[in-house]
Length: 307
Image (tube, rainbow, N blue to C red; front, side, top):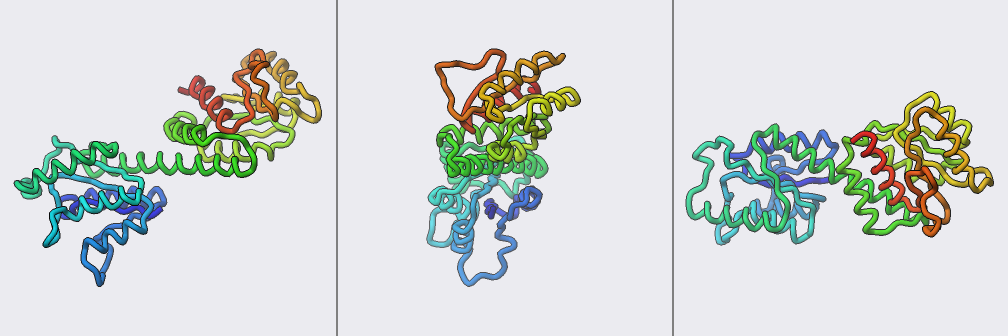
């Protein structure tokens, strides 16, 4: 992603450098005016052209309103924010903590102070902002915010691919799952999940999503092999198909055998045709034929096991 970094300059040099470094560590391209080079256009147009070609905007705002071009009444910094909203682009906006020590020469007096306060107030009514203190704090919170956004986007794109392949899911369901995946990323990373399916390719989208979330997956195609794995390794959850090798209730038989082990992880069943009137099989954690519901059930199980 191309991410434009918007702010006043001289008062926030260290913050801009820290933010650019955080974006680069995420593998993203940070766009900053200080590396534009010579342009045949004025500063305002140059910045807006770069924003138009960007995928998101990161804004950091302290105690200066910014330069107001001759003949205009709005600073370039505020114009960048408004232009990004009009696209619209994802906006990640950060405000310097009022308690953070700041050089008086970088604190605006009137009339810019009033213009700045008005701009900040309007911004906070339009987007969710976050308060930061030091450049290091800004880099950490920026990386967390953009990282969550990227993970959410990636999960949703994978679910969209699942829909394209004929797998059922709803638009609202995929968005909810994507947001939840990003929120729980630290909790579920490293979880151990056993997938039991005689045709594991049917679960490619689920496997891809789990891999993106750094969940460790063991795949077995038979109940015997799955039970052997369960006897040698601890798992946080099991995802099993119901029918295997032509046996319609093989999943239930597997669950019965599984319950004889000293400890039993939660089992989620996937089926080709879900019959809600039949309810959830006894001792199963859940049953579904939808990718989004399967992931939500998995998140429920992992939250209980690892949260």
